[in-house]
Length: 506
Image (cartoon, rainbow, N blue to C red; front, side):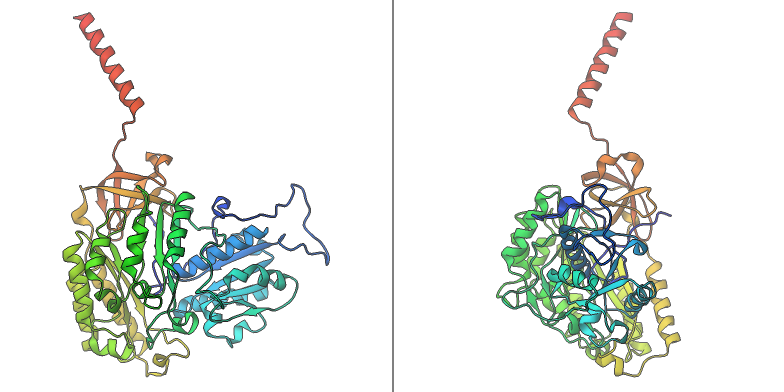
């Protein structure tokens, strides 16, 4: 079975993903680089040349957090620091954390402890230090806040000089966020992650992200569109719009998500695609007609991530999700009926403290009804400082049982079997982890694997593919032959020669 890379989606499902970036220096916009001359020795003793050291960067979490990591890597590289994927070779570790789930935070803290044991210089970033400033494991470490990532070079430089600097302001003076035009090193040179807003309007009782990212703060539309134009000129083939909740975009600056999307569509070149990030049900309800038209556009993936979290209104109320199951169903039913082939992804939390067996059964019925192709199943983890952490927990074994039962249901259906034999356009943007396949997506954001034996020319191309086989999580396909003019001329010549020879023999 082919092993494919996990897709980075949005804040709600937030898988743990190490992201030491691939170094693509050509994507650093307007950056001046300090270059070390060949053969120059590393500094010794007390003489430390700023920008000459090696930095290991690791990111946990959602696409928004990964975008922050790419911006920090870009600035450090532009200043002269070398970014490495090898933690042991680094002079300093920059650890960019996520606080959505317990396991991701635990992995981050374990990395901090490992760095301390190895006597590494450490800078921490992301939502954990921003939301838990007094976390014991972070004592004495330098910190880059989520609204201060444009000052990462300053923090790294001071830390390498033996100082501890902590920049944790929750909002910037004079602007609505960190500039989108900062230097950047993309994990994938073909994909640009563009944050459109940060923070949110909700107060979910289980979520700690609000503590770190704060209230809604939208980027100006013209800045987002300008960034999109720039990255397409740099060779990017796919843009992902990300935030804690894309549906809330513009509510603080007098505009809306559909207005932004229509402007972005105007600057997407042929052969390129846009993926709209996660939105919660209440904020998409008012834009259903526009969103259906946008998701049907040929340069926009017919895909939307709408987290429901539970099939029970009682549980949603205790979560303070500000919508009911009926609201979610209205959104999904409308998009299914108005966007041909649309893919809806969603999230479920198993074992929220107030979830009864009857509540869980309602969740199972919801999943059985829609048979979501992408379902992110999470066991409840109490996040320190949240209201849900103070609630009496369901026994761990029961939470695991519910998670196993939901997983079993999810694995019981195969959403792509009916697509085998179809011919579709697929944008190829990466390689599978086994190194044997290219990975692309069709219009509906289904993951399509194509054997690398068909040639390296496919990377970054929109390719006509015949779907030949399917599994639970992906489809396999064969690219259709492309007849270029010289091939047509050659084949025509061969046919004419053969016809002449046949006539001569006869």
